Image (cartoon, rainbow, N blue to C red; front, top):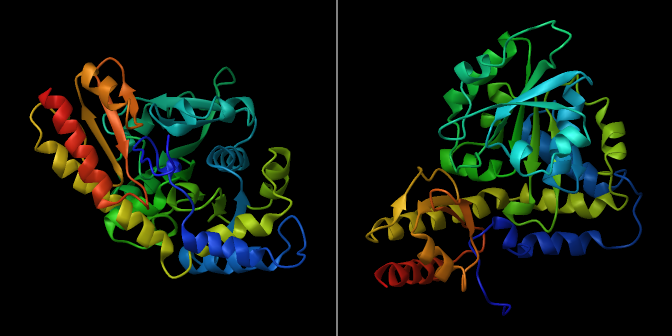
Length: 345
């Protein structure tokens, strides 16, 4: 494929935002202390406290799976378990890493829209103290969810209160946290710290970074073990300054918000365009930067010769289209036109 081709499979397909690339270049000056004792990482710590509150601690890692594994491992003892949606990334898209690497049992719950509720969590609030059952300790949610939906501020507050009332902790997988905050029109802390989330896996790669994620601890009792867990999980960067510089760039001058808002706007543009095409059925509400639709399998097959995107459900024909920080209106319009042509054919 040419360097100019555009994909709708994943926001990971997009390149590095120029402001992030500039930040990496600036960090590439002289020597710096390794493993996080550098000026870039210290600057990141300050920015994280600005966005998430003065108690927030940040631990940069290489990727989202690593962030989730380290965060969840810090919140559980070896015999404990994590409650999650059946569709959660930790369950279906991390190669079993939370179970293989962290040694955690995942207790899954089917959901219609990818979002957990107090009632769904209660399904697994059973058999406390039973030595034959992994003991529930953490609830993990994804914001925005794998189905493109976002929890509202009120939903998050209600969920956190319920989780804590059960004596559990709340982890948030925020690979697309920026997209959720942009969609809701709120600051990052309003859907994390202020509603009672205990720890966040904060995503940068899908929002314009080259490759940078972080564990952000909001419960002061969790931070002590993470440096050791991060090292043993092979997520401690020796040249940490280059990971930190990327995240710091996103948290500077609202770059995280600008990128996420644009991606969301392109998804809404795509949704509006395909809804007007006879035979295309948009399956879910578009809260962030994902559009889910059902196409005839033959149409999907023909489209995928020129455009990369995922078939989400082989049984129903549902596909997923992702927009990114660099998706243009022209990209969307050309793709929608191609869909219309193939549906007409």
